[in-house]
Every structure is written in structure tokens, then in C-alpha cells.
View 1 (cartoon, rainbow, N blue to C red):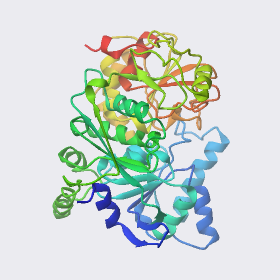
View 2: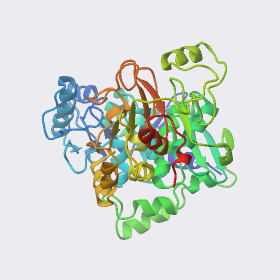
View 3: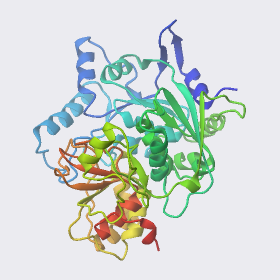
View 4: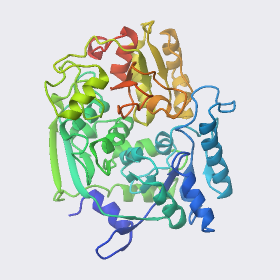
Amino acid sequence: MNTLFDKIWDKHVVQVVDDGPTQLYIDRLYCHEVTSPQAFDGMRARGLRCFRPKQIICMPDHNTPTHDQNKTIEDPVSRNQVDTLARNASDFGLTHYGMMSPNNGIIHVVGPEKGLSLPGMTIVCGDSHTSTHGAMGAVAFGIGTSEVEMVMASQCILQQKPKSMRITVNGQLGRGVTAKDVALYLMSKLTTSGATGYFVEYAGEVVRNLSMEGRLTLCNLSIEMGARGGFIAPDEVTFEYIKGKEYAPKGEEWDKALAYWKTLKSGDDAVFDKELTFDAADIEPRITYGTNPGMGIGITESIPMEGDANFDKALQYMGFKSGERLLGKKIDYVFLGACTNGRIEDFRAFASIVKGRKKADDVVAWLVPGSWAVDHQIREEGLDKVLEAAGFEIRQPGCSACLAMNDDKVPAGKYCISTSNRNFEGRQGPGARTILCSPLVAAAAAVTGVITDPRELIR
């Protein structure tokens, strides 16, 4: 019996090149402003139009400021990239959700919440965190700019078929442990290259019990283990999430789609190239101490005593020492957001900790919804009042401090506890020191001013 990955992949094969790649049909191409300009230029140079324009969605997110979006972008590079995407989308007749559009946000947040990403699809974008959409039961992966052009021109892509891996997490997550902690735990076990060459299917009781927001977070971080992508078989949680969304099938089409989606699972006798199993009891709230997402520990643990040259270099950059515990470590910035943790569930979690408390005076906090839809829901649920009473401000949607491509940069030497996906040197600004964590850990640090076990603050 085939794996679910095999089922979706095989259904999209156009042709197989002998001793070469597979020509794979792509259902959805997402374009943002950073990796698409050269692709559009290539199309113009060859006098081509997009083969299936309705399958392409364009949205600025990396360079968008998270304040005053109704005004001209001050940074000339960011302004040029955002304006160029708008012009290209118009020239090629593509759907474009620009800044201040109620449909705008981070492309990996908006796609699922609008029902643009659906089970059984193949989905690509010129962005590594396209793996996020795998939570919908889709085969989703990041591609390069030349491949973006290839999909625009033909709605197909040339790809070598990756190997299959199943990661099963059994048991029940403990108090204060989230999908982000599961992902950080898996990265510490596999390292940032442990899943290289594989497409990962997540399974087990823990995964089945995750909300869609949690699943999106888990799949988002697949790339940080080196995986080509990661996904979860669709189930009732998936179907309930999709139902009624703007681009979801309706009426008879819904019934037909649902019948197909229910077949999307690996058989009991499916054979994977690699299988790994983990126990939820071993996972506590997590933080990173180094300069890649695999350099992480449980929040009550100490930094390992020894490592390789990269380990020593990372500790020197971060200003940490082997054997040190990070509980009580002073932090300067808190970032809640990104395509990893910018969804409504993440804001609910953050608000649950800060409710009735106050932001630490010497902490700068950036709370950035992943989309205008998330912003609307925050206000509809009254979370904005809870956050404002605690001294926090909600910014406008965008990638924000996930990466230093917009105004939200962490100054050199400062510590930022962040719900984003990468803690590379300079990722949040030249010299910035990033500690990855869940929204609960971020909230606990925001009100105490130091790294704090959120379980101490959960009511």
C-alpha cells in the first residue's frame, strides 16, 4: 500500500524523465514580493503569459511595515519590492492581495484561512516555509525563483521525488506544552539536517489531537530539520476547519471533495523509507540557546557541556556558556507572530498568560497578527482589550521581526525571545540574539522580563 505522499505525488505526475526528474503538476502557486521579480522578468523576456493565472495568488508580506500601512513605505528597497509585485500581478492578470486589503497578511497564514490550500493539493512558493500548508493534507514545498518562473509558464515543475519519513508522537502533551515545543523538540533530536532528502508525514495521538493552528505550526518547521516538506493526513479537524471558507468547495462540490479527502491517508501496511517514534512525556516547554533551531533545550534544562566548533561559535555569539541554565536570563525584546505563530490560537495563548498582569517595563514587545483576518478575530474576541490592559500594542500584519527585511529589527547584542522559526546569526537584525520559543514562553518572558517557565504562570 502506498504512503499518503505517494498517493498525492503520483496523482500529479505528468511524466517521468528517464534517469531524471519528475514533471509534477502544481495546483497552487503563491508569490510574494521577494522571490518573484526575476521570475516575472523572465516571463516578459520570453514573451510568455501565465499558463493558469487563476491558480496563482500574489501577496506582499516580507517587506511590509507593521505600522502606518496606509502610508507610503519609507524604506526605498521595501517600497520597490512591494510596488513591483503589485505591478507584476496587474500586468499578468493575477489575484493580488495588497497592503491594507482585508485579504492581506503573511501568505502562509492567509492561504489556509481562506481555503486556498486544500487536502490533496500540490502547493509551491518561493519561500522555504511553504511546508506550512502541509497541515491541510497537501504536498507543499518551497522552490527557487527560476522554478517560480517554470510554474508560471507551465503550471508544472521538475522535481526529484524525495524519500518518505513518518514521525509518530505518542501520548498526551503536558501542561504548557504546545505544537511549537513539539517541533523544537524534534529539531533537537533530528538536528537541522536529520530529515534532509525526506518528506515527513506526522502521525500519532499528539498530532491527531492538535488544532489546525498547531498543525500549521508543526508543518511550518519541517524545513528546519532539513526536510523537503512535512504534512498531516486530513481528518475531521481538517474538514471542519475548511468548511465554509471563501475558496472551499460548496454544495455538491463539497460532498465530492470530502469523499476524496477521506481517502487521503497512508495504508496500514504502507512502507516508509524511515520511521521515528517519540513520547510526548519527554517534551516540556522549549527554548533555543544557539544559532540554529536544532540547538534547543527543555526550559528547565542546562545548555549541553560540549559540542563542535559551530557549537562554541554559537555560544560565543549568543553570550552563553556550556552548562548554563537560561531560566531567569534577562531579555530585551519579545516577538509574537510570523507564519509559525501568528494565528488566533497563538494570540489566545499569549493573552491567557498576560491577562491581569503587566508587561515588564524594560521589554519591547511586538505582537503581530499573521493576517487582517487574525487581527479582526483578536478584536472580535476582546483579546485586544486584554493585551492593551497589560501594556501591549497590536501591530499591523506582516512577517515583521521574523527576518530583518522590514522596520522591525532587533538591535545588535539584544536578546529577543521569539515565536518565529529561525535564530540564525543576524536573522532578526545584525548582531541580534534570538531565542525561539512558543507563545506561552514568550508571554511569560514579556511580563517577567526574564526567561520564565510558563507553567509557573498558568492559572
